[in-house]
Image (cartoon, rainbow, N blue to C red):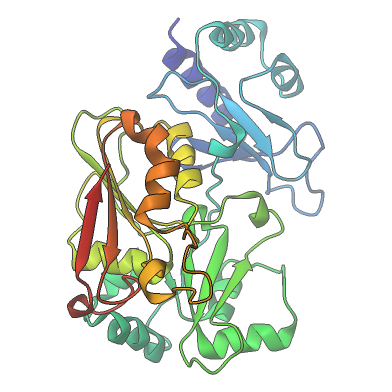
Length: 355
């Protein structure tokens, strides 16, 4: 019995429970959701569940689970879970035997994909105009949808029947009126940008549900999934913010197959690379491009001339050198014309260093 066969038998078993009226749902490729047998899960709605299962048939990792209600977590399938959900001895033995030969996920590698629908983005076109004008490019409706743009917070909440409200009504009204949103990876948060530049905060991070804050917050453009087992060339572009990410992808034609564009949400590139390694993205066919903000030039501290900036080539070389043998290349970039990449293409001149 191969691990793939054992995992497929387990998925088949869970779908059989679904046919018998129990809640079980595929939320993403290799990710499933069911009611948590450890805590009993929510009693308000029996058609919801908070136990997420990572069951990837195409790799040699074990089955991991994490409850986003009670916190029950395991990087491998356990006898206790199998007992609680009523597995027979034959299936139980198949799954427990995997523990000896299969790899284990780290908890931080378990990304939950919340299953939300996105409303029509053409409702408030002035917000889309802000994106186009800032980047100097006219985008199609499909391109905006791939950016996972939210123009109406209230339509999004209504469409998905979301009752959680993390902020007071005056903040929600402000977000509805003045901000354009971008759904993060895993659909756990909305990153809102003020399109009027009149409010106190340029950016506001909006957790969509109470479980949202258990996810790592970063933004990706919607692209074709990457097969981590492929021998083809893979390119991963890391930048700081949402508009940097969109600018790099569109200005330098990084929207094709086997490409990821990620806004880290800060300058902790080392942490993001470690996270990607935990996901299995490592190999001599992978190139990492880091499009760092040029703080050393444009945000220079005149009072401290010897300050080392976390986005400087010097600092990035020092913290990333340990990862260099794990990839084909790690390239560092600065924009020498303006600080970042969330601008029109004519305002970008790249300076590159390879590690």
